[in-house]
Amino acid sequence: MALYWGVCLMILGWMTYAKASVPENLDKSIDGLKAYYIKNENELHNAHPVFLRVLKDLKVNLEESEQNLLMSIIMDTYSRIFARMQNESQDEATKDRLAHVQEHLKKLQENYFPGKSAELKTYAETLWAIKDNDPIVQQKALFELKRVYREATQMKNLKNKDRRRRQVKSTRKQKS
Image (cartoon, rainbow, N blue to C red; front, side, top):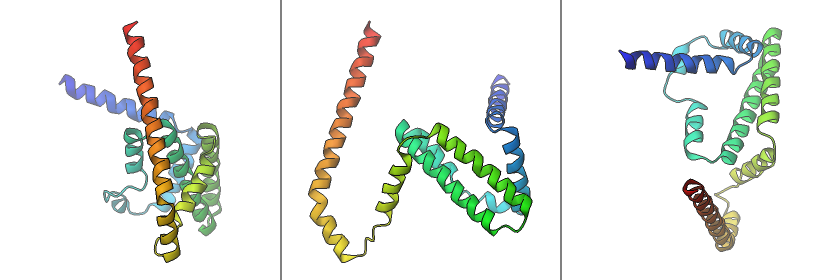
């Protein structure tokens, strides 16, 4: 019985946290958009989330700087989705709600994920756009492979050295 109440309290805490982290006016805009766009909720529960699986992996597998970059890319993706929805909508109230949500996303991204994430995203998009079926690209990739491989190995070695230094420092602190 104690386990049951513990789980209930934990879930209530998560719900409270989730509600508390979204400003009330934004929450109302999102609910209005859901009411306008979502007609059949069955399609939403097909075990293929758009962002939630990435978020789960983000917290487990990535370092903070990587998490920030990925979250920034997620915020950009939301902005693109909502901009398209806003352009395609005929309803002015819906357009206003979408603009309101985009404004909050932009502020969130500026305040919590600043830095070079936009520049890094540009690099990532450039790399994703490489045409892997182009023979010239394939030849250039082969030509550059040894240098890129050496650079990646050096970065990995530096990362391992930094990790070892942090482990040694934390071990020294624990002994003191």
